[in-house]
Image (cartoon, rainbow, N blue to C red; front, side, top):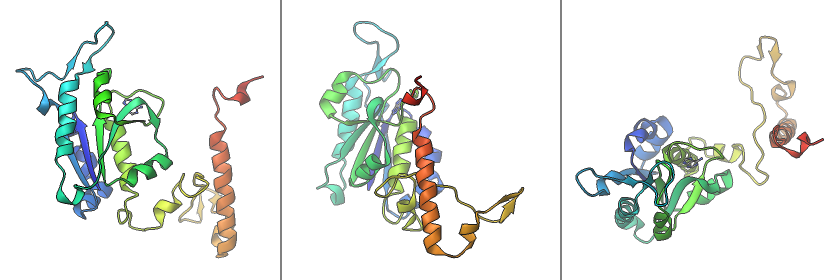
Length: 238
Ligand code: ADE
C-alpha cells in the first residue's frame, strides 16, 4: 500500500513513522509512506498558504491553490505498480465521517491513500469542490490540525495490511473486529497473584471451550458497559 500525507508540518511525522510497527512495515516493503509539504506549492516571496475568510470571521483559511496543486502533484506521481489503482483522497476534519474499525477496514482495501491535513480554521471550500475527498473525523473534539488524526488513520490502517502484525491472527482478535465488533475483555499474564488479585481460575484450567465461553461473556459485558454512555444519555433523564 502507498500512503501519501499532504501537510504543512511533515516534521510532525518523523518519530512516528520511524516507530517500531511502521518502521518495520516500511522496511519490509509492505507500506510506502511519503510526506509532501503544501508550502512547496505556495507562490510569492512569502510562500503564503493561508488568508482571511471572505465575509469576515476569526482565523485563517488554507488557500485552494497550494493545497489543490500539492495534491494533484502527489496524485500524478504514480509508480508503475500502482498506475491502475485509483487513489482514495481523504481530508481530516472534525466535520467528517467518524472513524470506526469498519471504516478502517474499508480504507485498508485501497492500494493507495492520500491524507490531506488541514491547519488554521480549515480549507477554502473549493479544495473540497475540486478534489472531492472523503472527509474523516477521528472524534467529536477539535485538534489544531489534521496531522495527529492522519497518524491515527495511518496506524489503524497499516496494522491491517497482511504481514504487518507478527501474529496473523491478532488483528482479528482486536477490539471492534469480527462480526459482532465487541471490545476485548480483561487479559492476564504472570504472576498468578498480584497484591492479592488472582488470575481468574478458568484461565488456568486448560479447558479451551470454557476459556472461549468466559472470554466471550467478558467481551459482551465490557461492550455493554462501554455503550452505556454516562453523560447526556437517556439514562440521565428522570
Ligand atoms: N482536525 C481537527 N480536528 C480533527 C478531528 N477531530 N478529526 C480529524 N481531523 C481533525
